[in-house]
Image 1: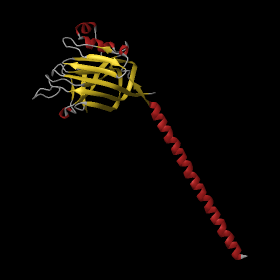
Image 2: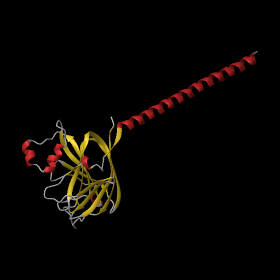
Image 3: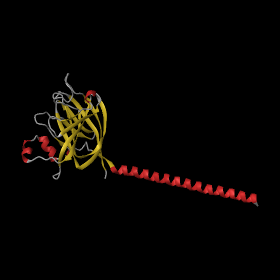
Image 4: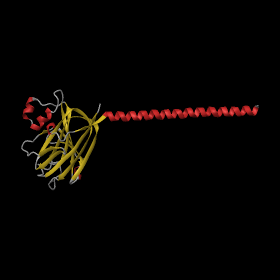
Length: 255
């Protein structure tokens, strides 16, 4: 009887250990399952937090085509292929007012550039006689600034138009420009524009000498945007070239 009792006790201990092991394995599986569910939930939440907003480049009626005083305007065309700006010693902006204030996290642009700027020797791009860029993408930011009647009467047309983009209950902060260049030494330049304290600029992207480009940027902080401002210029440098934008997409708050 004694040996049989020892054997029975040994088997009982094995069964107990086996039961505890199965319990631990089950706990691990449950934890992994919960982690997987949590991760899937986070991904789904991220998906709904931000959405893509496609800017209609083929709908001329959705845009405002402006001109500067005393400057020749670009030739602007809207088509199924996108937005085209032909520069011939000229400069002018086009503005897309957003349907509502959008919280923008990032931007993507596809397009093509044909031609280059004639930057004078001994002059840096952005200087007084060479303040031309082939691609400027401006974000008109929500703020508190408004024009009083006297300021409105004296301001340039483009400034008046800019303030008119804001709903009655809000104002403008500034236009934050991201710019693209074909000149490596221009990259990384940041400034408040000497012409107006409403304009802040950053030279962010490198363009090819000729050909297709893909520009992408994600802001470190969300921007509250009223409108988009696109411009290409060649008036300072007496340049002629063509910019075609085939896609312009914003990452916006989907909440």
